[in-house]
Length: 269
Image 1 (cartoon, one colour):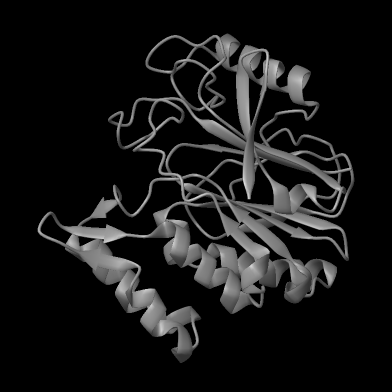
Image 2: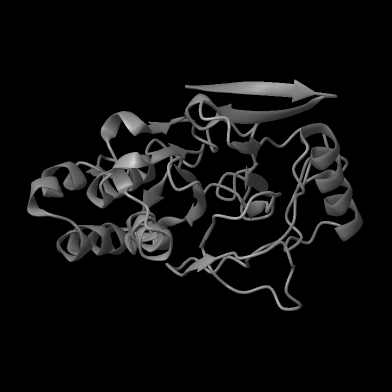
């Protein structure tokens, strides 16, 4: 399903389902092997953190040198459901706000940087289109994964049945505790985007125990992809919790909001 690849003490995660078509390069970075000092130790890719910018730039250069994909800011994340098409490799003077990006242009690297949120790779190997999604809890609430597939269809003629998708490590249902009000927001949203046949599965993504309410972002986003028309066998999830595995991944919640950022990087070749 996925594998870890290591070069010069830098480890990344790659998904077999994306590699199998031979038309993309991709990876999801881990936290070790860079130059940043605590609490950003050590492969912090987030220029929007309070880490020294020169350290972040050095970390991005290390990844590019070892794994052959440029690492750069394409969008500023705003925890919403805006999806932007990318038409060329020019970096705008003002980076736009969005949480989804897509392109059919080769050798244009898409990147997002975050900690604990859910990153989603989507590939249409027929039309040769890729998309990269940042699905925090607010984006998941607004069904950004489902909306991204619809945007690919509108912009490029993508047939969802042709698509494959990989869901990156993120905070898991074991650790993503929310307030009762937030749990209710999810429960009340289910009639907004989903067919009735999915409502039971959706409700199982919100659980309650003696500690509180917990949300399963992995399953919620998988259901969104299914609702968009992807086949179940074409969706994989690492099911790795970034909070449980804080030695490998930055965790915004586990580290009290002061931490580095991993990167998901995707490019047509």
